[in-house]
Amino acid sequence: MRYEFNEVLNDQIDYFLLGDIQLLARFKEENGLPDDLAYEFTHTDSGDRAVLEGVVLPLAGIENLPYTVIFSLDEVSAALLQPGSQLKYRREGYWLRVENRAVMLFTWRVLQHFTNKTMGDLLARYQMRNRPIIELENGWYQVEVLAGAVLRDGLYEPTFEFIFESAARRIDRAPVDTAYAFTLRADIA
Image 1 (cartoon, one colour):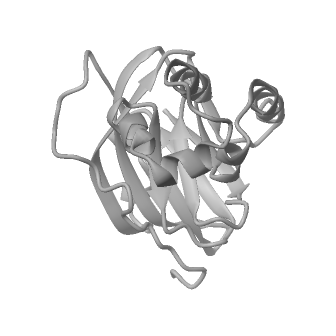
Image 2 (tube, one colour):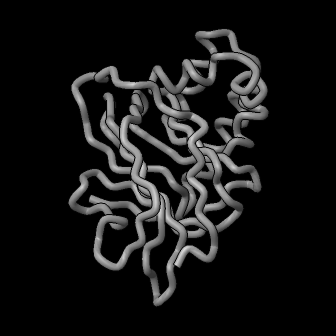
Image 3 (cartoon, helix red, strand yellow):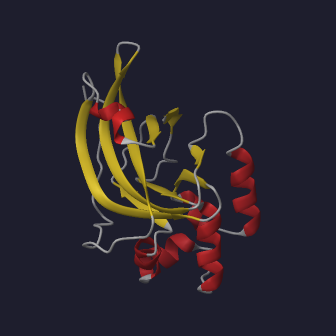
């Protein structure tokens, strides 16, 4: 199964985050973190801990472009692996934990003033059509990140695709490079 979202923007900051936003709120509360998670994550090791604990998956180097974002629940339906697509990056080894039956792609700006009210406002906005959020069963997921371009209406669109594979538990692997740059340009085709 595959879910596609068009015209997803990065709020002019070169970063996307993927995760269960309510789990991120719990991580913040349990660790006594401040409302400015952006500052906290860049000045302490709490951002790395959030990644290691499967709370968020970071994507750095995001150019200011409109993106197609795809969530694929199996590799067979992966759009960037289909003929005619242009795959530029394929990165494995990411893990996400889902505890609130939803995963969303959100921007770095969300972290700058991360309160219960702003999180509630964000969740309300994500109920509108074409917002990059999907329902998933609770549990651990191994996530593969694909980046490149898919052909839509005769044009190549910069695309990020996340392939989710359910797992009974997290398997420890090498640490993830949280600064890896997934740089796609408008002239990808």
